[in-house]
Length: 232
Length: 209
Image: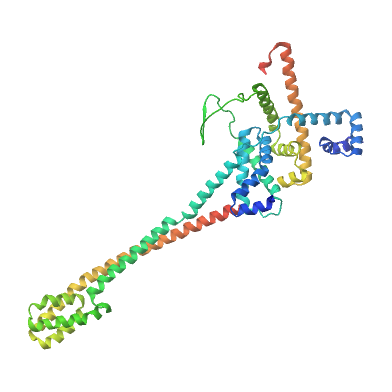
């Protein structure tokens, strides 16, 4: 056997993996070759040395520690899954509520002043009848009532004034003028409220859109992060 | 009832932590031993083993089952060991014995291994362990890993090749180089200690070495 052949068997020899025939041939080579003998012997000694300390048993809390860490991470993950974009979403919802509430409350006042919304107009005829009778008996005291009425519906008020004018001639002049007066009074706050409403919408709608956009963006980012984490 | 690894993995992925506990119970000895041989001390070994198991758990959803669970596990463990060694190299290893350590679990007082029933023996064991790990530590980490896996932990060549994602031939040649290097390092150390003994006998200057 040559040294080259012996070197190829060296590994198996060190691992006690040589077959009977190989073992005999290898050992007879070692007997005549001091280089190979030294190498085999010295590697064997070095390996015996590093094998002298057995690794201890794993610490008893090893598994427990890992499980606790897993649970801690799961809790953090749950929290994160809930958090991204949540505040922005809540803000957007709040702005939306404000927007709806603002428009509804302003919208209720405005038609009463302008008097061109059907709900009020539908209600009025019975009220109209009542007030229409009043000028017949007492023309002068009727004025404030008609004026109040004119606040709710000026167009109707004119019609009534016309009706009432046939029954009580003296009252007509007063009624029409007061109707004109109250028409002026009615449109001023009406315009003011429309401007207020416009301002409110101009402020709140972009705010709502901005918050919604932020919320969606945050959620998407979080989702991307999570998919990237799992894929890597 | 004995479930195979594959079944336990499936249960883990459905969120069953007790199945993961069982998987860890099956492999903790092998994983911890490998980590111990790679680090040379119990604390770092425990840290590495924990880290490796955590990585395994986190990566479970990505485990497709093309290879055996054990092969996949060893791959993660060996990677963790190699990373751990890289990190350990850039970290101071000296600790003061007269000061307490602030850890997550409160204050810790360091003690020399001397409170065990046989202090003399355990001191010698610690000394020996120190010598062994410094010897193994002088090997390049790739060689150390192969040598530890094959000659100390008894993994098969196939297991090592799969864990390190290299060919069988690479494992064999790396192991060969590792053994030759270990032999050289061992002889050098032997020479030094025999020289120390020699000097001690002659005139007691060993403390200079």
